[in-house]
Structures are given as C-alpha cells and as structure tokens.
Length: 57
Image (cartoon, rainbow, N blue to C red):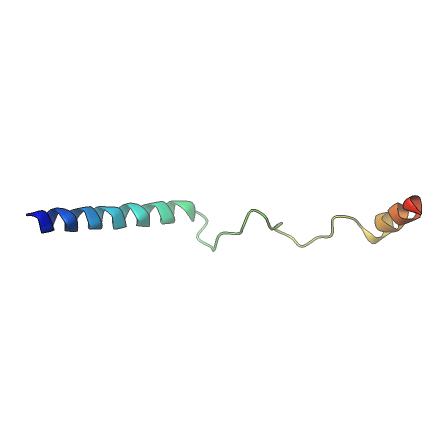
C-alpha cells in the first residue's frame, strides 16, 4: 500500500508540473525572455547620438 501511495504522489506531481509548464506557454511558440526587446532596434538613432555627442563635447 505504501508503494501505491508513492506512485500516486509521483504521478500527481508530474501532472501538476506538466500543467504548470503548459500554462506558461500560451502562445504556442517558445517563450521570449522578458529582458530582451522583441525587436532589435537601437535605443537612439544615429542622428540623435551625434547630437548627444556634440552636446557632451
């Protein structure tokens, strides 16, 4: 009986883990890390960087 309880707990834990992982991935694609911007655009344009550079010097 003890072995049956362990098996039941293991199956339940695996099921909960599967549901938790599947719930995080709702878009159907690989998750994008939040620290990375979705598009690799520069923060400042070259013109603005040149203006900032002139202002600093």
